[in-house]
Length: 151
Length: 151
DNA sequence: ATATTATCTGAAAAATTTTCTGAAACATAC
DNA sequence: GTATGTTTCAGAAAATTTTTCAGATAATAT
Image 1: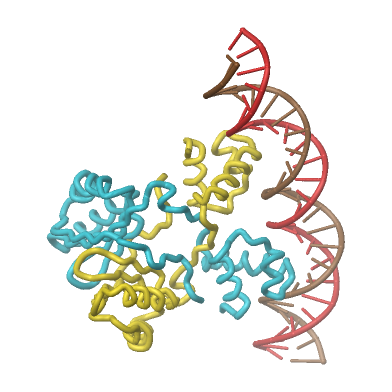
Image 2 (image 1 turned 30 degrees about the vertical axis):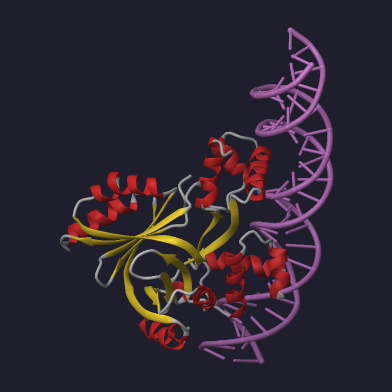
């Protein structure tokens, strides 16, 4: 399904999606058209889902990252869905995973500073129904943060 | 520093970096050249750090996400740096944050399945020196996962 | 008011993407 | 072994996009 060239191509596109097909062709020992067709195929099959620009957090005033562990009061189906809907609509929340363990959800929240985080907690997060308890840990430093899956 | 048009442009590029300047120009009520120059400026200033292709985790056999909370045995400077270096080199680790709270680090680990996770733990993670304890929670479902910062 | 700077538009040039044609490589069936 | 179909490839041509350029407009400061 994915051969060596596809995998190499995916690595390159995950690192820099702005490379021209010519540059890619050169690195992969293929013609421009071959690269073009492989990319189209990977897009068609849904292996590549989208192309995005990544921004510098600090430069757009989102330099403060917080991880929120959340427990719901109950685990009825509609409690979960309602919570998930509301949390998804918050654009300070970049990630939300339903997880195993002591807590039900793990959220990655990105704001400007601790002041904005407080405001986020008070005015947005804790106004969501059914939240039992939350435990937040602040990011002291970002050691690694990549979108690159090793294929 | 960033005006309304810049912010709108950044939103669009974070959603889809493959749009042509013509398409962007239309949405922003600008000329193609104006869009072109704004993008170049945002790149030059480092607001836009890179362009990447995002992949479907399942389709590349990375459908299993685990969050690992890690405590070090000590917090000497060189313990931290050594740990951070080693963790950064592991390509199953997409993210690593030094965090406040009970644990020192929070890792996002992505592998194929629980079997591969076990192998990652045994052969890679726990072979790193100075690790005190770890606590892992598995992702049951991915509720939200975006790279888009709201500017 | 004038110079300065930044940002804009529209046209032309350069480069890239996309389409098209046909060849090579490969597997399968007869 | 040969025919057949499929996939992948390369190279040329067409279509589109990016990039450069010249000059206009708007905003700011002296």
